[in-house]
Amino acid sequence: LLPLSQVEALVLAPDVAWLNARIDRRFEEMLTQGALTEAQANLHGWNPKRPSSKAIGGPELIAHLRGELTLDEATEAATLASRQYAKRQRTWFRSNMKAWRQLSLP
Image: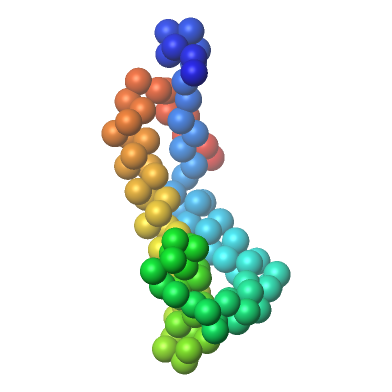
Protein backbone atom coordinates (compact mmCIF):
# COMPACT_ATOMS: atom_id res chain seq x y z
CA LEU A 1 0.00 0.00 0.00
CA LEU A 2 2.94 2.31 0.67
CA PRO A 3 5.93 2.74 -1.64
CA LEU A 4 9.10 1.21 -0.18
CA SER A 5 10.87 4.52 -0.81
CA GLN A 6 8.61 6.16 1.81
CA VAL A 7 8.78 3.55 4.56
CA GLU A 8 11.23 1.37 6.35
CA ALA A 9 10.14 -2.16 5.56
CA LEU A 10 11.16 -4.73 8.13
CA VAL A 11 11.17 -8.50 8.37
CA LEU A 12 11.24 -9.68 11.97
CA ALA A 13 13.28 -12.87 12.16
CA PRO A 14 13.18 -14.77 15.44
CA ASP A 15 15.96 -17.14 16.41
CA VAL A 16 15.13 -20.55 14.89
CA ALA A 17 15.83 -22.49 18.10
CA TRP A 18 13.59 -20.11 20.06
CA LEU A 19 10.85 -20.41 17.45
CA ASN A 20 11.00 -24.21 17.40
CA ALA A 21 10.72 -24.33 21.20
CA ARG A 22 7.79 -21.90 21.01
CA ILE A 23 6.07 -24.09 18.41
CA ASP A 24 6.46 -27.10 20.70
CA ARG A 25 5.06 -25.22 23.70
CA ARG A 26 2.15 -23.85 21.66
CA PHE A 27 1.06 -27.29 20.49
CA GLU A 28 1.23 -28.64 24.04
CA GLU A 29 -0.91 -25.68 25.12
CA MET A 30 -3.40 -26.43 22.35
CA LEU A 31 -3.68 -30.01 23.63
CA THR A 32 -4.21 -28.76 27.17
CA GLN A 33 -6.94 -26.42 25.97
CA GLY A 34 -8.92 -29.11 24.16
CA ALA A 35 -7.49 -29.68 20.68
CA LEU A 36 -7.89 -33.43 21.04
CA THR A 37 -11.53 -33.00 22.08
CA GLU A 38 -12.08 -30.77 19.05
CA ALA A 39 -10.49 -33.36 16.79
CA GLN A 40 -12.71 -36.05 18.35
CA ALA A 41 -15.77 -33.93 17.54
CA ASN A 42 -14.65 -33.80 13.89
CA LEU A 43 -13.64 -37.45 13.57
CA HIS A 44 -16.98 -38.76 12.25
CA GLY A 45 -17.17 -36.34 9.31
CA TRP A 46 -13.42 -36.06 8.71
CA ASN A 47 -12.60 -35.59 5.04
CA PRO A 48 -8.90 -35.09 4.32
CA LYS A 49 -9.75 -33.37 1.02
CA ARG A 50 -11.43 -30.43 2.74
CA PRO A 51 -9.22 -27.34 3.14
CA SER A 52 -10.06 -27.25 6.86
CA SER A 53 -8.65 -30.77 7.19
CA LYS A 54 -5.24 -29.56 6.12
CA ALA A 55 -4.73 -27.40 9.21
CA ILE A 56 -1.49 -28.28 10.92
CA GLY A 57 -2.24 -30.65 13.78
CA GLY A 58 -5.60 -31.80 12.49
CA PRO A 59 -4.48 -34.78 10.41
CA GLU A 60 -2.04 -35.83 13.09
CA LEU A 61 -4.64 -35.78 15.87
CA ILE A 62 -7.14 -37.63 13.69
CA ALA A 63 -4.46 -40.28 13.01
CA HIS A 64 -4.01 -40.60 16.77
CA LEU A 65 -7.75 -40.97 17.35
CA ARG A 66 -7.89 -43.66 14.67
CA GLY A 67 -5.13 -45.59 16.44
CA GLU A 68 -2.57 -44.95 13.70
CA LEU A 69 -0.23 -42.87 15.91
CA THR A 70 0.41 -42.57 19.61
CA LEU A 71 -0.30 -39.13 21.06
CA ASP A 72 3.46 -38.54 21.33
CA GLU A 73 3.94 -39.48 17.66
CA ALA A 74 1.04 -37.23 16.62
CA THR A 75 2.47 -34.37 18.67
CA GLU A 76 5.92 -34.81 17.12
CA ALA A 77 4.45 -34.96 13.61
CA ALA A 78 2.33 -31.85 14.18
CA THR A 79 5.17 -29.82 15.65
CA LEU A 80 7.46 -30.95 12.82
CA ALA A 81 4.84 -29.81 10.29
CA SER A 82 4.67 -26.43 12.07
CA ARG A 83 8.47 -26.06 12.01
CA GLN A 84 8.51 -26.93 8.30
CA TYR A 85 5.81 -24.33 7.64
CA ALA A 86 7.83 -21.71 9.53
CA LYS A 87 10.88 -22.61 7.43
CA ARG A 88 8.87 -22.16 4.22
CA GLN A 89 7.83 -18.73 5.49
CA ARG A 90 11.47 -17.76 6.15
CA THR A 91 12.40 -18.91 2.65
CA TRP A 92 9.51 -16.90 1.18
CA PHE A 93 10.59 -13.79 3.08
CA ARG A 94 14.17 -14.15 1.81
CA SER A 95 12.98 -14.58 -1.77
CA ASN A 96 10.26 -11.96 -1.86
CA MET A 97 11.38 -9.29 0.57
CA LYS A 98 15.00 -8.80 -0.42
CA ALA A 99 14.66 -5.02 -0.25
CA TRP A 100 13.33 -5.18 3.29
CA ARG A 101 15.64 -4.86 6.28
CA GLN A 102 15.80 -8.02 8.34
CA LEU A 103 15.88 -7.65 12.11
CA SER A 104 17.05 -10.65 14.06
CA LEU A 105 15.14 -11.11 17.25
CA PRO A 106 16.87 -12.53 20.32
